[in-house]
Length: 163
Image (cartoon, rainbow, N blue to C red; front, side):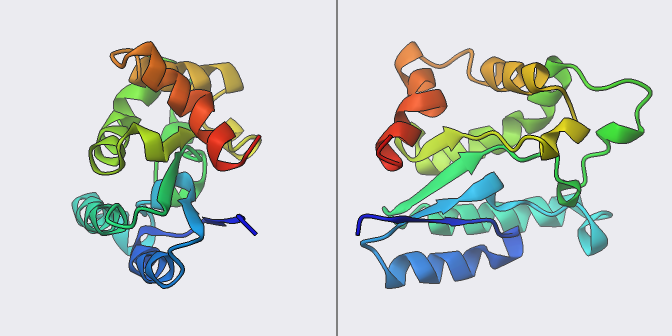
């Protein structure tokens, strides 16, 4: 039926998404919120471990040609970002600097054609206003050619979801 499957999972579940993508290669699997590298519970004090496990899962999932990644959703508390405890909300520059390593990893393994930005409003409102959030994304892609930015912000989603 040319449908896709969006998966909102934590990084510890990415190997199961790999199994699913391999079992159903004709179905497009979309990893929402970059597979949430956890920053809470046992990972709150060991973000290096979380990042290492997340990247291993991302690398493995990227070998599945039917897998795509949505970049965003960072307002969810499970990421472990502590922006809400600060005296004032973060700027788009601060957000971009914090999230850039995630985007770089995703693009390194999946390439621009299998990635897209996403909105997770109103959940992300806990971190920043809508404009600040999207300005952070624009800052993160400022060094990319216009065609790749268009793909990440529009074209890939339009193609994948047949919009």
